[in-house]
Length: 345
Image (cartoon, rainbow, N blue to C red; front, side):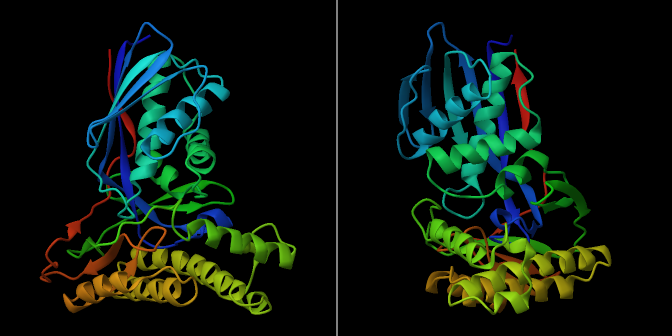
């Protein structure tokens, strides 16, 4: 059993397919180079001492009693609690956390933290641990039950299954993950901050998920994956608009995969614009600051730009053609490796 391990988990960019994961739909994310690194070292006592280096903050708790808390500490306690429930013998450990992905940007810093934590703690236990699909489910329970953000599996699966040079077509009904070559022919994908941070647990994210569940209840279906546009129109407002967005964004994922297959970047840009309009007009997750960031990208020549992540702030994503100058403060993003152990000794 190792006495010290280091794990890294990337954030992600979601190319298209937003708020579809918890509706058993489709999405097309990719892992990015930025992420969260967790170093864990065995302690002789059954306690976890956690240090968030970026925040200069600490937490300490006994393994037998990880009580619910708020903020970053909830992720650590939730990871320990869920791993223990899954039969992983987490040892006492000092855990140091450092991140390079901006928090509240819609780049999935939360999932990167969860995934890096569970990878490090499983490795430190010396056990094989759950497979990657089950790790994604476990991390989702950390976010749902401990952090109180009712997210789906998109972020965790993207972080765990990321591949350089590829996006991932994820079917959230079957959990099939298909690597899709992301060949941009000299185009660039960039993210640009809106100036507003978002936090899923504190934003309207949970409300949107509850609205989708109410729509399913009224229609007598398990998920909005089963709903057509004609059926969506039978729902009362705003549930009809929520179902409309989910249905059409699922369609846009398939169209985006086809566009990438024939390297039609103009069409990909149009799909990004259409997804943004749907998130703004049908899902009501945009803000004036987000709209201003989208306009900056479009003014810079972006073929398409859209809100990214849960909404209510965060970053926007744009597709810039060759020769276009990215707005100041933007970050170019490329598909990178998924979560992995960096050291175990």
